[in-house]
Amino acid sequence: MSMQLSVVDYSLQIDFGSDDDLTDLHATLVDARRHGAAVVVRYFGRRALLLTSNELVTEAFQDEATIPAAASYRLTTEPVLGTTIQCMEGEEHRRNRALVFPAFRPRVMPAYLSSILEPLAHELVDSFAHRGEADLVAEFTRIYPALVIGRLLGLPAAPEDVQRWAHDLFNYPLDPEGARRSADEFTGLLAELVAARRVEPGDDLLSTLATAEVDGERLADEQIFSFARLLFPAGADTTYLALGNLLYALLTHQDQYERVLGDPGTRGWAVEEGLRWEPPVALLPRVVPDASHWRGIPVPEGRLVVLGIAAANRDPSVYDLPDRFDVDRRASATLAFGSGPHYCLGSHLARAELEAALGVLLDRLPGLRLVAPERVRIRGVLGGTALRGPDRLPVRFEAPRGSTDLR
Ligand code: HEM
Image (cartoon, rainbow, N blue to C red; front, side, top):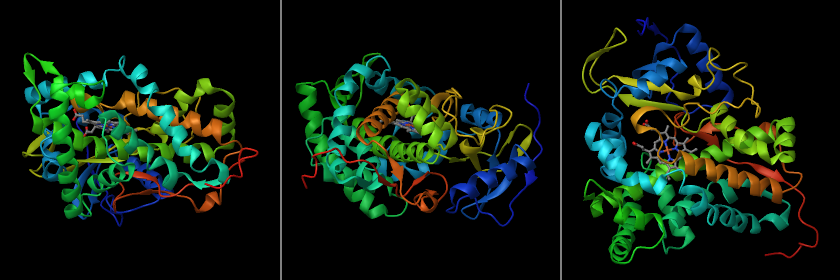
C-alpha cells in the first residue's frame, strides 16, 4: 500500500533543466531529496514534479496509466523519428516491442556481438595508439557506439555518414532542420536495404527486423525505418555518454582503475557501477496527459514529472555510501535503463559494448591517465541536464615500442 506523498515547493533559484556540472547536479539532488521524495522544481522554466527517491522513480516508470512514457515521446521524438515503440502504450506497445525484441534477445547477443564489438574497438584504437595521447571522447566514445549500430544494421555507408546521422538525430532539439535532413538521407538508404533483405535476408539486425513475425504479423517498412532511426538517439548516444562517464569515473579513482586493470573479472561490475554512479540519462521528463491524482497528490493536465534517475541511483536508503564509486559494490538493479514496460530494449547490447570497449582500452593503452583532470567535467549535453557525459577526456598513455610510425 503506497503512502500519500507530501510535496514541498523547491522551485528555488535553480532550474533543473538548465546546463550544470557534476558537482552541482548531484549536490542539488541531495539537497532536493532532503526536502522530500517529490518536490516541485523548475525544469526549463516550467513547474515540474521532481522525484528523488528510488521507490518513487521506480513506481513512476511502471505507472503507464497516469504517467505514460508515450505522452512525452509524442511531443519530443515523434516529429523527427516517426512513431516508435516509445510513443506507444498498452497492447500496441506490447505487440510492436515483441516484433523487434528477437533482435535484442540476450542469448543471441553475445555470439553475434563478439564478431563486431572488439574488432571495432581495436580499429578505433589503432588510429591513435601510436601517439601516446588522445581525446577519448572525440576519438573513441563518440564514434564507437554509432559505428556499432551501423554494423549491426549492416549499413553499407561511410563511417562519417553514420556518425553524422547519429549526431543529427540526437541533436534534434537544437537543430530540427538538420535532423530532418539526416533522417531523410538515412531513410533513403534503409528503404533500399530493407527491400533487399526481405528477398534475401542476411544475419544483420535489419534482416531480423525485416523477417520478424509475431502472431502472423510482420513489421511494415515505415515501422522498421522509425525503429532504425530511434537506434541512434536511444542506443548510440546514451552509450557514448555512458562510456565517457565510466572512463571518467575510473580515471579519477586510481584505486578502482588499478583494480579493474588487474582483474578483468571486475570489468562487468565496473560497467554496472558506472551506470549507477553517473547514469547518462540522469533526469527523464514525462508529461502527465490528463489531470489526475498520483499518490494522493493532485497533478494538473500537462504537468511535467521529472524522473530523477541520478537521484534514485544514489538513494541512501538503497545504497550504502551512495556517492562513492566502488566497483565492488555489485549492484546491478539500478534505474539507469529505466523500469517497467519501456525498460531499455538494448540493455544487453549496451552492457556488452561498454565492457568490450573498456577491455580494449585498458589492454591497449597502458598507463592510461587523464591530463589535467581538474579541468574535465561531466556536463549536461544538448543544453540541459537530462543527458550527461564528459565533453572531452584528454589522456596520455604509453605508446607501444617501435610504433613511432606516423599515420
Ligand atoms: C548505456 C546505454 C543506455 C542507457 C543508459 C539507456 C537507457 C534507456 C532508458 C532509461 C530507457 C527507458 C526510457 C523511458 O522509460 O522513457 C531506454 C529505452 C530504450 N532503449 Fe536504451 N539505453 C541505453 C542503450 C541502448 C541501446 C544500445 C539500444 C539499442 C541499440 C537502446 C534502445 C532502447 C529502446 C529501443 C528503448 C525504448 C523501449 C520501449 O519504449 O519499449 N538503448 N533506454
